[in-house]
Length: 189
Image (cartoon, rainbow, N blue to C red; front, side, top):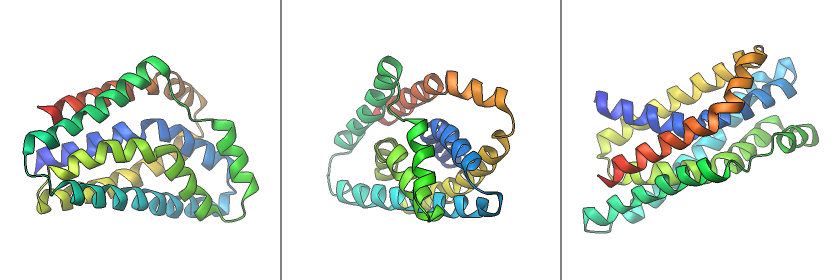
């Protein structure tokens, strides 16, 4: 069970460390009385990505040979290498402008979550979900919910500390890339 929790924590952190910066931008651009709406929007967006990953994992679960499923580990390795060599394509100014344009904070945050995290989350989650038993899957999903709540709270707190934001902005891509590659190798093995 500890291994399953650690897998969930590692997978969530690897797909969300760069999203932490976006959460900080969202919290910084949202009125104080609407902070809970950001959390609800994050739950909605993340839930859509997790459900999509679960559906894909279910479909891929019909592939009989386990070694074929292990090849899904190539996806996070390639994502990590792309991140190391080419960087990210998230535009923080675009996120901030998007928040100002739309009236519904919940839907706006959900759309931003899906747009900025979609490929990462699905690329990492599907291989993990495919290789998980039902009980492990439940533990991973509970871990994801806990981590999402924690990241939302950390994003809210970090928006008040500019030096931490600068460190995440500078090194977050490299940390994320290393974790992607590590997860991909773990899945391949």
